[in-house]
Image (cartoon, rainbow, N blue to C red; front, side, top):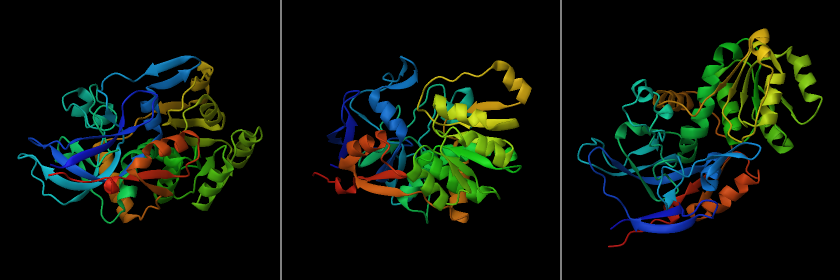
Amino acid sequence: MIKLIRQSLTAYGKPLCETVVDCPAPRGTEVLVRVSRCGVCHSDIHMQDGYFVLGGDKKLDVTGGRTLPFTLGHEIAGIVESAGPDANIASGGEIAIYPWIGCGACGACQAGEENLCAAPRHLGIYVDGGYATHVLVPHPRYLLDYAPLSPSFAGALMCSGLTAYAALKRVADRAKRGPLLLVGMGGVGMMGLALARAIFDNAPIVADIDPAKRDAALKAGAQAGFDPADPAARKSILKQTGGVLAVIDFVGAEQSLSFATGVLARGGKVVVTGLLGGNFSMPAAMFALKGIGIEGIITGTLAEARDLLALARTQRIQSPPITERPLRDAQRSLDDLRKGQVLGRIALNPQDAARSDS
């Protein structure tokens, strides 16, 4: 019997620990995937904590909807191990998993927006994910070929890449008219930079409080980098650009959103993807007086995931820095990410943990 080895969340606010159970047998349209790599995402920290910060002393409790022990991880690439009788997929295929799986019946799902499902079954969020040797996927339509990309890059594309890609699509018309500003050069921001370099003619400008991340972004092709904590940064951007028409906030904090809106030109738009937390206030009249907009997104659709993989293949999108670690280092990776000590992305390799018992 194949054993499913996991780095499991057994209590909120506590370190992950290894758990071992029998691997589930896929039924119906289900597919059992042997995990090759699983990325470590900042949202995994919030899931481990059991809450998102809403500002002040307010927190959004996210401990409901799952049974412990629970397996985090949603940036998954792997190999088809076995499939249920109705799955119609062969074993052995190398695939990336679209993890934002919905109920299939609500209005969002019917519109192809399973990432916005009212009763989601997102892997690593509501259903056991990829910090494990294997993961069960409900249908083969969520399995996407990624060759010739690496499994660590393909897995990252399913969350950080997809989030950045969906955000870029929402400012594409404005980004063609002037420089795009990316705020926050963590894993998602660096992915957004790589995609923006492939999609738009003009290289974006970037902002991050960490000089090492600004330097990494400049080396990856950003045309300029700014420290948003520098009081002169806002004036410098306005002087250089006359105001930007498109900003993507990969941080999602009071300070980052204030900085983003502060450099907007008339008719500009900010897309917020980050989840760091905090409150934000702005005079309501400014929305109309400047004709600006603020939009939030959460990942992207299955169709966008397919388009993104096709783009990554044909345009040879540059992968952000990815550090590979064994599955047993899942907690250390979350700790490093929490401390801001990760440049780019971390991908866990569970194959050193894999074993089978007869």
